[in-house]
Image (cartoon, rainbow, N blue to C red; front, side, top):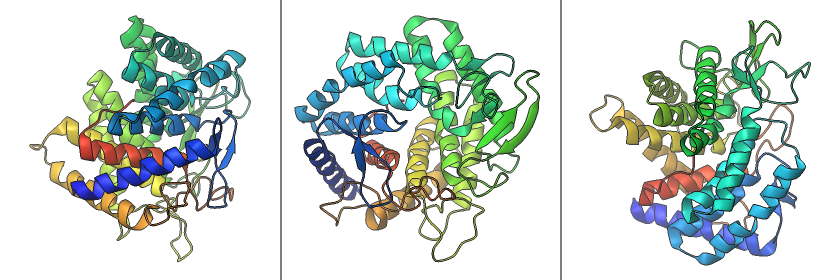
Length: 374
């Protein structure tokens, strides 16, 4: 299947470069108009765009991608210095794929320092009375002060990396403890997951599971499930804690077992299915990256290896064949039929920049075995 993957990668790189040239200095934001809204760096998603530039440079060697991505570092530094919309856990999404990616590829000291600043900012969201990283809002926020979110598992690699760079065990301890709490409270016995969970801010007592973007509090939002598949696999990579590996596999089996015939997830596994029910191609792209990570970890002797490999192949073939924009040369996005916040009617069926990123990451890792920036 190498030809299929490489053709998709070439198409993706061309679209990324076209966007860079057409919208110089701007970042893609979510709309409902089959295009991106291009603006400034103030959301949680900009890192994915920069990450695609680094993927493109590493894959093809075109220095245009490298120079452009490097030029954005000052923008990310200004955002950090000015504290622009950083009262959330998504600091890892922003800085792992920009600053740390640049450091990994070029060895830039400036990028490394910015990555460490980001890790320090994220670890400040640790709430020791609960034992978690607060997802959203400032400390003591009445609605979100005791709330965690499964998405945060993809931000923990920023802290593991900071531990490796500095030797400060606090980074590792916070990331490991938060992953354990996520495993305990966000993952249900059948391998499904809550999107969010609430704790009492003073006592630390567990209160209830909930959702923000899923169908209902007790449902399984598919992108949340995908964050769990990939996130727990990454925590295993950094900690070698077998509990994280088993949880990633458990979440992956649930995800795969609940897919429709074309192997691309609907937006929530418990949402009523009609001809109009939105898909979330981005959830399937994230899970594909998680499966690639799992396959690299477990090896061919594992009982789940063939099952996961088959699911990965079918998912990626479906994404390339039926969900990509390969036959749409003027498209700004790479994957059709992603969803952001269906209940809120925000981007229920459109391009999602994180879907584009994980699609591209999965393609390149399948084609070339390229490492991940997480």
